[in-house]
Length: 158
Image (tube, rainbow, N blue to C red):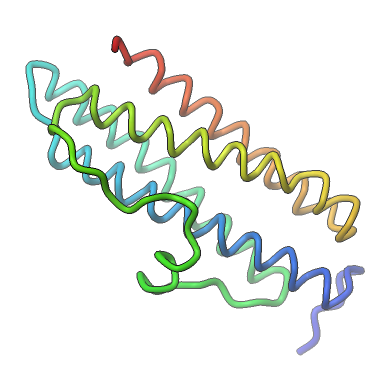
């Protein structure tokens, strides 16, 4: 069935391609945050274990909303580890100690990278691709990542 929502197929495809990259970034960040939750060590273990859990729960909701936005544009969301690793702007893993500050620093960098990627697409989605809905949608996602990054920064003492 055709997707007739007032946006050309070519524009919906371009937006969906960028959203697929965002979904891949979200999935990689989610996985890295899960890793932090599972493997953090140190005197602040309990507090950080719970903190990382709250962050990966937020990311789970974000991933679902990005995938559903792609589907609402009439395209399929990538859904394999291989495709996520091919599409992501993030690195999968870096060697470090399993202390909270190491995890925080890496996760913060990833959130900031996603924020920059989103910010770079807001105007293009609205103006170039005539998709104000997705522009508004990713603006909200950017604000969520900005808040999550702030929370990470508030824990960082290094």
